[in-house]
Image 1: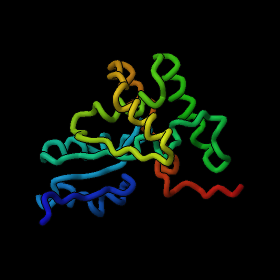
Image 2: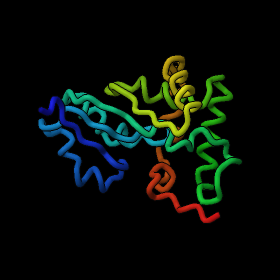
Image 3: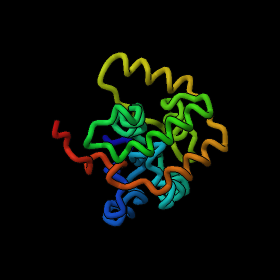
Length: 172
């Protein structure tokens, strides 16, 4: 017996929302999983988060760390992701200015959004699991002005930076 059915958004692209958009609100599905992070706010910008909340859907957000990208310093980026250097510099600048770690910013920004019910956080090592648990337990709420800066600074991120399946393959 199925207790709850859900649907998952793959990449937040405009094409994907045109293709599956209305299915997200179908009564068949009680839960929706989608990627979103400090650099990728498309579900906020396109109104999907508000519509999901209004429809009473349970929302799970994954990709909080953009496959680890938000943890990298700009100088650590592989050559095939150098376009992400400027956004990462901005994120690290916010972290320094507000005295809040990048990881805490990444978690708190998404965790505290209206309509987000749960976070799905991946890890590759036991150390990452322990670090993620600490972030989930200890990340403070963000000051409102920091949240507004994040929304403003990362409003027009290039899709090729925030959509991992569009990342060029590392040639080195």
